[in-house]
Length: 220
Image 1: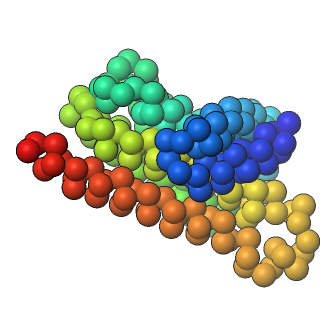
Image 2: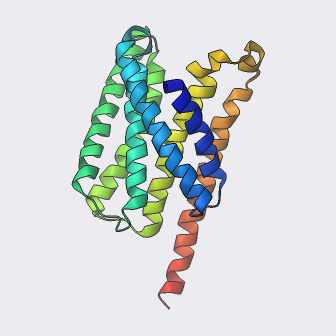
């Protein structure tokens, strides 16, 4: 079920990312992505604990992806852009996950040995993604509210980052083992992750730039 939900999440995420933003197709695909990616992430976190000897990092990746999905969905739904109790709880959860990933990554890197199946840099890579979200949460809690364009940007980059995790798991992570060996060694399986990052940057720039350009007109 974890693999099936993850596969559906990749398809739904691709449609949502490529569709015109705010249109029915984008909304429907986005909802499907939230449901399938949320389910896949929770199952992945559980599997990471059950198969900790070889896949413990999957627990932390699942927690991170679940947090990103929920906080992104909340940013889209909460049109006031204000902080609430759930935001603070989610921020604390992600902060704890980020700290754990950092500590494990530092210790594993210093020892030069893998920790429960993965090297230190793998944990630190996830810690870096979690740290970006920590910075966003601190900014939101400090400011207490976000403008529309920054709220949409928060929704956008968090959803894209969770999609990046899903694509990584499917194409360059454990899911790649189901693909032909020649394809695995071709380097082509890294393209989906690169495309996601490029599209995320494009939509972020467009969202923030259009928001700034519209502000003077609104004040006339």
